[in-house]
Length: 428
Ligand code: URA
Image 1 (cartoon, protein in one colour):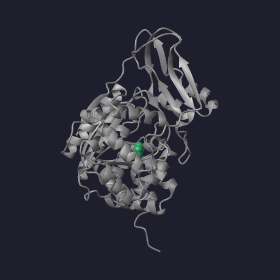
Image 2 (cartoon, rainbow, N blue to C red):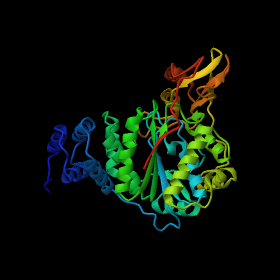
Image 3 (tube, rainbow, N blue to C red):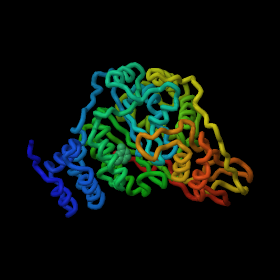
Image 4 (cartoon, protein in one colour):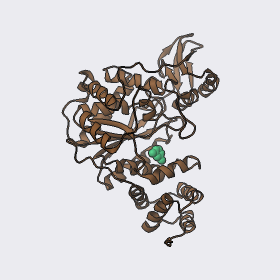
């Protein structure tokens, strides 16, 4: 039996007592946790000590490297074009990856988008894509390469070989109240993105009531931490801090968001979704250092839509097939004349989740057609009796708890409450 160089309890005590962990301690604890030598209860205690006492920049970088080293590191250098990816810290109605990946591909840069499933009130890209009949999320590395080379973009599940330490730790954090720690979020996201092997990375760090980081200052701090980790790993990285006080677009829910994304690819769609998609595309193309086309033109001339169709087909999906629709749609109407005063992202996200669009535990199924649609944004004029929201679900017994989640999350009155600008900051 090999002798372990540290005892987990000493590493926990060091962080509890506000010391910086040494490189050797970090390398060991991450590796030993992945091997099952450090127990869940010990890692929970360490994660809580990190949440409470923080980490230095050097500790975060080492922790990230240790998580990368726990698994495989992918490489796209055989591809005929440069790669760029984007990662969002998660928001309500955030379907941007769906139109963005084919759009950037249509402009000459390959997008290897290795995604996850949703947990809690923010949706997951794979859950959205899986509402397309036939579409398959799991690909081998060879299949991933083939789709990327032939279509320019691939959206698929991150394999279990990518940062397995993070997979285990993220699941533990989820049930121990230790998700909202900047060192742990930054290292979790960046270990996966660096291991994924993208050459350039644009981060969309959300702030507002529907985001992890409700305060813009905390979002900026998270963005700065992740950008520094990217630079240190040789990945060209930029972050935008963007609004998540109001949900994005007009829909939250899997098939509903695919429908909206296809509208954007067809040259239409909600203004905020189009604006953010184009801005992120610009940032990705600039970082990658090449562009064969202007992104706005690629939406107008149908070339982004062509890539979308090829990309969906390459993974078994039928881009022409009708998307699932819910068995029940419940409209919520305005009870007075006025303007929509507010529409809280968190309320809409919780309602969509309760309608069946999201899961409470990993591995649970989701309803493809469930979700929330809204017909007005803050400041829009609404008339008494006019539908403001529509709740979609296959299980109507969920509607009362969705309505409860929405109570107070929207209103009609004389004046709209202030909202955040769509793009608050850019950090490079
Ligand atoms: N997303 C991740 O991948 N990890 C976190 O810690 C938080 C969000």
